[in-house]
Amino acid sequence: MLVPGFARWDDVVSAAAVAALRARTESVRLVVFDCDGVLIDSEGVANRVTAEALAELGWSMSAAACQARFLGMSLADMCGAIAAELRAPLPPGWEPGLAARLAAALGREAVLVPGAEAALRGVGALGLDWRIASNSGVAELAAKFACTGLAALVDGRVWSAETVIARGGRGKPAPDLFLAAAASAGVAPAACVVIEDSLPGVCGAVAAGMTCLGFSPDGDGAALRAAGALPFHDLAVLPALLRQGMAA
Image (tube, rainbow, N blue to C red; front, side, top):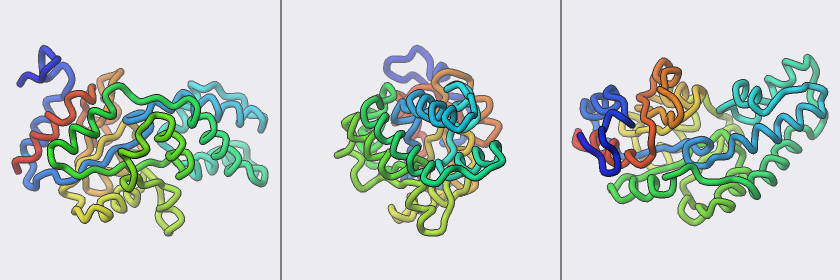
C-alpha cells in the first residue's frame, strides 16, 4: 500500500500494525494521544531541568541519564524513585517546586513534534474523536500547549495524571489515565487506539485493553513492540493507518 510522500508503506509502518488494525472486530472510535514525545518535543528541556534540580540535591545525573531513567513517568512516581535512590525524603516543597520549574521552562521552549498538529487535524477529519492523556501535570500541559499554539485545538480534550491521581487513580503505567480519557468520550476501551512513545505509556494502554501504536521516529520500536505496541515511525501516516481499523 502506498502513502503520499512515501515510497513504501512499510518504510514507516510495521506490517504487524497494519494487520492488527485490519483484523479488529470493533471499529476505532477514539484516538488517545500521549503528549511528550508524540505531540510535543519537550523531553530534552524536561530532562535538563530535572538534571539541574537533582544536582541541587547532590545527585549528579546527565540529561541523557534522566531520559533513560524517568521517560514516561509521572512526576509523583519520579519523585518517589528519586527519594528511594537518595534514601531520604525529598525536601519540603521540592516536588511542586520542580513542577513549577518544568512548567516555566516548557512554557518558553516547547516545540511541536513534526507533523503533530496535522495528525490531530487529520484524525478529526476522519470523523474520529480524540483525547490527550499525559503523565505531565496540569500547569505543565497548559504551558506547553500555549507555547506551541495548540491551546485552542486541544481545549477540553486533555487528561493529566495529576487530575486522575487527585481522584484516587494512578498515572501510567496504570490504565487509569487512559480509562478516564475514554470515559470522558463515552467510548469503550476496545474501540480506542492509543499513540504512545514510552514503555510506561504502552503498558498502561495494554492494561486498559486498548490497541497501542508505538511511535518510534528514531528507531525500530523493538522495545515498544515487546511491551505490546504496534510500531510506526512517522505521524504523517497516522490518519491512513487508523483508517485501516475503521472498517471493522
